[in-house]
Amino acid sequence: MAEQSGLIKGLEGVVAAETALCDLDGANGRLAYRGYDIDELARQASYEEVAHLLWRGELPTRAQLDGFCAELTAARPIPDQLLAAFRLLPKKADPMRALQMATAMLGTFDPDATDNSQEANLRKALRLTSQLATAICAHHRIRLGQEPVPPSKDLGHAADFLFMLTGERPSAVNVRAFDAGLILYAEHELNASTFTTRVITSTLSDMHSAVAGGIGAMKGPLHGGAGEAVMLTLKEIGQVENVDAFVEKALAAKRRLMGFGHRVYRGGDPRQVILRDLAEAACRQSGQGMWYEMAVRLHERVNRAKGLIPNVDFYSAPLFYSIGIPVDLFTPVIVAGRMAGWTAHIIEQHQDNRLIRPRGQYTGPGRRLFVPLDRR
Ligand code: CMC
Image (cartoon, rainbow, N blue to C red):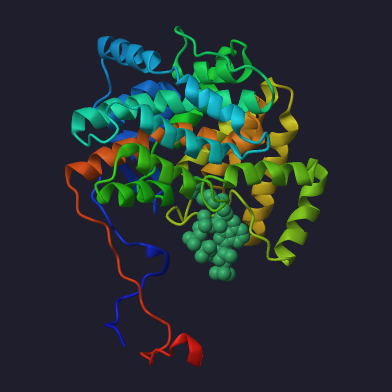
């Protein structure tokens, strides 16, 4: 029998890396990026300011922000070959698969693709963040049989995303809500997808490869895919009056309720408090208050019956839906937000790398004699 290891299933509670990016206090439901409380960042900063903070360590001055935004804007266009590749995909192709393909393909065009120096990684982080936003919207329009909308030169990151998605200049209210949503998703310590990007980076692989892996991890319904599942649940419920019966049936069937529970926050996810306010305003403003009301009732009923608390993906669902994000783009949008955090972690991992290589506890048969094929 091989040596025994202290098995910690799901690595729960294991501290696997040092990070200066995110201070996640699960017991007290607090979250800060590089020391700044998430509440203040979501309500007062822009996604660009947060990306600057995560990548470069400090919030930018006005002059720094202007230069930084100009760089992000210049990096928005994606190669024609990627647009051509989107046209070759089946119309039903999962947007997350298309995004993974886009990331790998962008790596083949990136002049710094295999350069893991700090300077190259900062350039790639910026390019990838801008390009993947463009790619998400371009793929979406192509699958609908529409022409992609080229990125604008005068809109901020959040506004440009909504513009490329719809071809229309978004309202200030929707831009603010979407910007805050991106900020709330920008970083979250060693969640499954960020850990994936750090594992890939620890082999001295490159940023595009790590981000493509992160997208694969984010896709699952226990992680970023939960937001999409929340919206499908709300649609299944249909109206506020159906919530109680739905919850009773779901709990009796021991159904996993998407958007509830968290590995680290046991008392409450601070992001959902902010998202709840944003969702209420956006749903009411768009005349879709029913989604918000349904979500609140579901929250209350599930909490009362099972003590479960909503996580970040719960109120982001009615928020995204009410500002016109298609349900199967919720997870790509979460990726668009998480780009700043993933890439910051990739840079951090390169700065103090050690191969991430845990052990497995063997549970198979003991040693046995090999039997040649013709005697089996
Ligand atoms: N619905 C029903 N029961 C739940 C849920 C839920 N959403 N979450 C936890 N539980 C129960 C679970 O059945 C278990 O009960 P018991 O001990 O009786 O078997 C207990 O709570 C502990 O659950 P767990 O799955 O062992 O806890 P975990 O830390 O491994 O899981 C989680 C955390 C997020 C995977 C889980 O809460 C879950 O599946 N939630 C639904 C999916 C979801 O919303 N994911 C988004 C997570 S936050 C954002 C992100 O990561 O992107």
